[in-house]
Length: 83
Image (cartoon, rainbow, N blue to C red):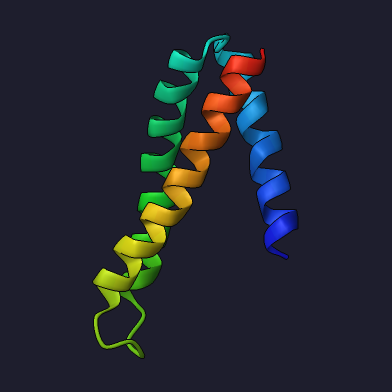
């Protein structure tokens, strides 16, 4: 399932890059940071807020958001450079 999720996220990120005219690695970096903050940080930290089974849910959420956010940024830089 992670492979399917990553593939779908990359397709959506490519569509955002195309729609915004992102065509350099630098523009991909900006797109990746914006997308990572909006999607990874907001979603994962919202989920972590309600995760009561973990000893430190917000720490867990921050680590997860960083992991997903970095992946989005790397994908956006690759997509931007490839365009």
